[in-house]
Image 1: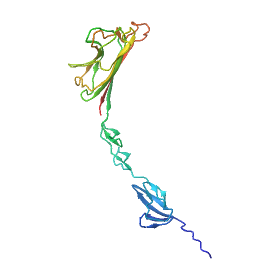
Image 2 (image 1 turned 90 degrees about the horizontal axis):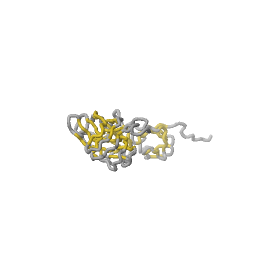
Image 3 (image 1 turned 60 degrees about the vertical axis):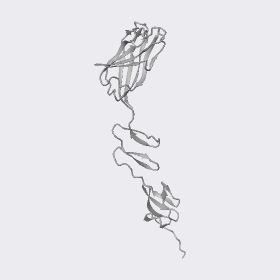
Image 4 (image 1 turned 90 degrees about the vertical axis):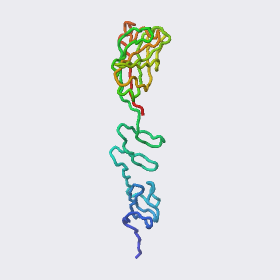
Length: 263
């Protein structure tokens, strides 16, 4: 009677792959590729060919059950990031640090970053006539500005107030910070903005600038809108219906000071 070779009728587990062992189809091995341990089935007789490299199976092998890389993290808060050739651990940073791109532009790291510490907001909503005298405080934005840390923080100051203009073609104005108990810091002409100053129309006076000034140190400040030049005023600040009947509500100005810490 003729003999028929059926070959293997089940997989043959050969244990951990060994480079000097000859393998034939349907042999099954385990092999660790980098940090990932998987099981493989031989598809073509082979000797000395690792079942996979870099996650790609060799032509003589096929994945039977592909493993998963072991997490490189060790501590709560760690992140997994891609390194030069494989995933790796990025240890959690210190309190207050931020995640950012490193100086080489090819990876992540924790370090100092600019942080907004507080947003101080003030409103001005009282009509007052302008004064054409030189070096004159025109109105008070607030008498209770208390920065968190003027010595170490910086400030982005942005604000504007609607005005009824007086026909002045140039206006020298800015902000004065006067500390309770003594100390004055002037921002004459810093980031000033105004429109249509020569016409007797409605417009605005404003300012937008950043400063690293420590002012006069810690304390509470009064902030004035100040005219530093003569005839640098409108007819009125925050005009209302007494200026023109079309103003059916009291106009309002707003000043915002963003206190932030540089990186």
